[in-house]
Length: 299
Length: 297
Image 1 (cartoon, rainbow over the protein chains, first blue to last red):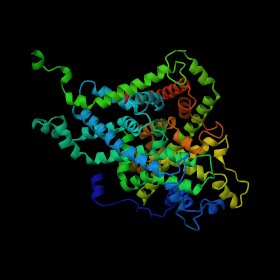
Image 2 (cartoon, rainbow over the protein chains, first blue to last red; image 1 turned 180 degrees about the vertical axis):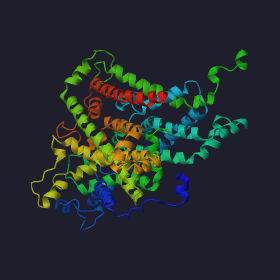
Image 3 (spheres, each protein chain N blue to C red; image 1 turned 90 degrees about the vertical axis):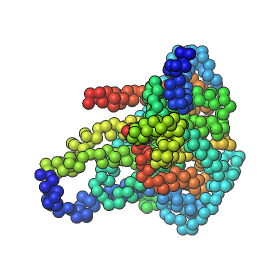
Image 4 (cartoon, chains in turn blue, cyan; image 1 turned 45 degrees about the vertical axis):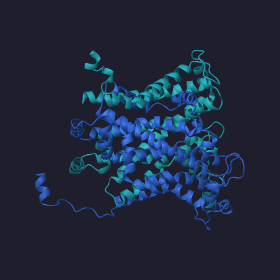
């Protein structure tokens, strides 16, 4: 019956016009909600382009009468945290220096974990994996202090290296899950054929698995870049003022109690900190969604 | 000799085991070891440095007598309940709207999700500015002529958590929308057709058929939101830093303050152990539903 109906073409009432009352309501709701979501970005942008006199006149929502880029320059190179007045650029470069090694370390460890868990299971490997996943739910606060002690023992407390290790450790559950699921979904014959040809653990990883799984590496990278760049808690605990990542420095600049509040500089600084993840987000599109969905919904 | 013929069990699959050393160390040392270490030290009188002189439940008694901790718990409860309900409702409603085969779906999705790419610090600072009483929303609305309009949540202890809530929902609801949308897309088109044939109105189809079918998705969303709520820290630090006074303190901040500023490690450990306990209370029913259910079905 259903097949016949399909073959005869559409039946039943004509599709509704796209401007029915229900649709107007639907689009109206969506547009209204969009305003709420877009408002902060808009306000940040216009505030960062105004001069302080104009801001004092009021109306955060009004577009700038006179566009000035001075707040951006000031936020980048002159804003003060405590006695340092070299702007947010220090935090930016700290964040870059944290991000790149963390990215490489966490993704290589996690991809190898995922590969071992998918193709080279050993006794107990599943147990470790289960605890790893449960570990993702343990509040960081219960593990923070023991890590302080460990880092102090190995002499990495306060250094970028220590923070890199912390990011690798806390990125591991989600990334390992991501890679394990991906490698499990690859056809097993591929792995078996390589085994027959005499390839070993590392041979198969580097020559077969790695080239075949570039998309999942991109997903993992998106996940990690935004995650590590946006981190605040680990940055504030495991680094010292000279190595603070951008988010921590930003918070110190904006919430500093001394001096006159320069809201335009603050908003420029806030936008500068948000730009990296925003660019990643807008550039990656569907992959970003895939990344967060993979991290969230198992399987 | 014998060992050469039958390689030791330990050496079988050796490369895989070597490659898994970082994972094994992370699991044993940080996740299991670190957690146990903290729980054990929560029963000690550690102050500046961790020490192993046990004082029983003293730290917990002090914790639950502390008004700051009680405020933290209440705040988290207010924030948690509101955030849970609102995020679920907004997330599902937006996903359902986007699932109505509308035009520009990708544009709307991009708009709803972009805050999720931003950090809590950026989120908190942006909303701190919008909610600024002198120059922000309040002053704009007053300038329009409604001179008695008052909405200054960040300086009003009674409603400060709602000010944080606005920002938290702005940041996180898009993510739940994506999760819900994935769930809605997974529902068989035939169910919609059947409901239409039976003459069930759209809203009723959602309430009676679709939402019950999406139970697993709702459970996942619930766990995601709940685990995010317990972590609430950066947003508060950026937006109010716990103020005015102690009005927007939260447990995660309590822990960090006692560990790294008040130099009262024992209190910090006890408070973090309480956080762990609350996570376990949330997780066990979920794990039971998730994994217990699979055996039956």
